[in-house]
Image (cartoon, rainbow over all chains, first blue to last red; front, side, top):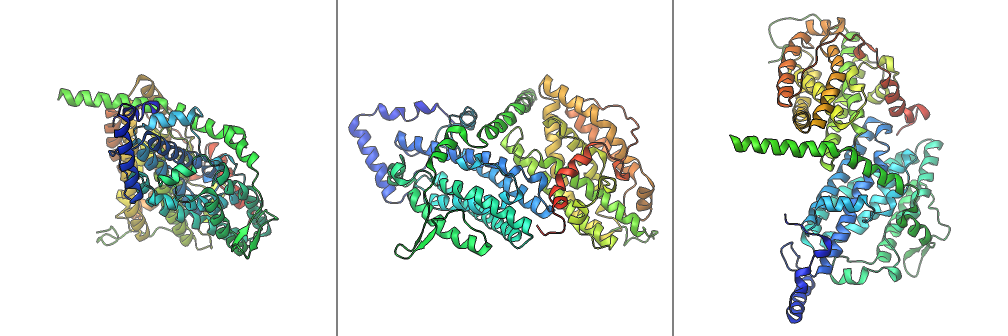
Length: 331
Length: 263
């Protein structure tokens, strides 16, 4: 499809007379208010397009970078069944990345441009994937908590106003909820196992609990994009609402496993009928976002090295395709 | 009609020989699946991450069925995981070709074409083996293997008939790996007993069909078939290159470090 630079997107709107633009915007918002989907060929404000490109490409990059911490255990999975489950899960994540890149491409950006933005550090991905997976229990914990948090974030996106994104999310959510159950089941096995296995599970939970809560993004008071995104129905709940939902759902699961969440302030609040929890270390969140997390450099280095080491392969494929086309033309 | 149902009668294959024959097939799929798993997340393009993961999954799936069957033949209480995780390298009977390092993507593809073409002939033949379980496993595996070869040969043709660099890289990998193909077709006592019992194919017949297929692929890839060399260290007899020990030390780590627990 026709693609153009991000900075050029929506330029055509600038050429329109102000009244015409206002009318287009009003019609666009009315469509959203009526819960109709916006499709790639429909007119949309430049800022809506840019917001979606940013969000969908970040989501795609998160799936791709997310393959690395879990891929770290494919060679060491402790049973053949677990190995198959893990390979299939990491493969699903790659598949999610592929649908999401395609969904973003409908907005006028190419996959090559998005990959370039990831590798140059210009585009972000979920901060959670900058944490390491030193033990097998991290694989269970990622499934249980990280995929659990992702589902909380993503189920509302199945009703997102942008059609291609909403439709991609339906399939992704089904697979994510399967991953979440597999992760929980892995943890259950560890928690009913030996003292070493229980220790492994508890340590992994200690590592991942707070970073999982950070996955919902800054608190509502500090979230730049929330208000506009909610008006556009890209977002249906605020970061804090989703975070609270996640805590409420996860506390009983941890109790069931016999694990302790690493938060002394965690307690049931009779009045609000929600769990109160301690304050998040937003400095850590900002540090990890700014590239100072435990594995930021390794993650991007791994992506860059896959990209660079694969350059001759991609080039050969293009050259071969061109040769084939020439041969076909001669026949 | 399977060979078992045909009029001809076959001598029985002893329990220990059948066990070892099935283990050879199982370990070959397992170690290759393990090797391919190393690529996931690091392949040249997202589609290749998915393709390689898919083949790895199929191979480990085949290995699970074959290892379970081997465990039943042995009747010593070893299941697929005890066999995969608690044997040392001398008891692994995979072809030495599949334990060779991934190298660059082209090297992985060369290794894959050589073994896919072999497994395709093998699984096709095994669909009519006198061994019912092998027939059942082959019926599923042959469909997977057909796809594997389509994938790997498609890439070998692209890389061989791509740029000068890609051509030189895959030709060099082909030259390096070719010596390991000798083992694929050199029958030893177990192969002969399995063949006589109608359990396994005659390897020389497999060789001619494999050769035709490989020549076709190499010709499209504009690659030169290396000269056969006699290389006598055979993984299928438990004589491995140095690489297998490292694969196992990684693969078996958790089971060895925390014995007798359930995962």
